[in-house]
Length: 135
Ligand code: NI
Image (cartoon, rainbow, N blue to C red):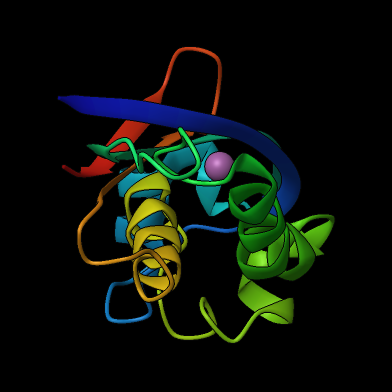
């Protein structure tokens, strides 16, 4: 039987949404307040869900301590209290929308999750706005 286990995590980060291919006016039009050249912050809430069979040896789908440490290393240590545009390699050349942040997190975590398990990343940028990536 397939079982989903999830771990919640959190980070604060600043960003600016801007597409350098577009004019200033177009960026202002598309991204609104998120185009503020002086940046602004969000309290990001992350839910990482791993789905698979229970390992009969441990009774776990995945060791939550291991998952917690993985999220800390791959996400929190990189993004928490950072300016995503200026202080991370991931978003130097990638517009840090919630969509792209979730995709990058999914890609970072996927490399470490066993192939027998599926991975879904849910990222809340605000309490009402969230995106989902993966299975
Ligand atoms: Ni924003």
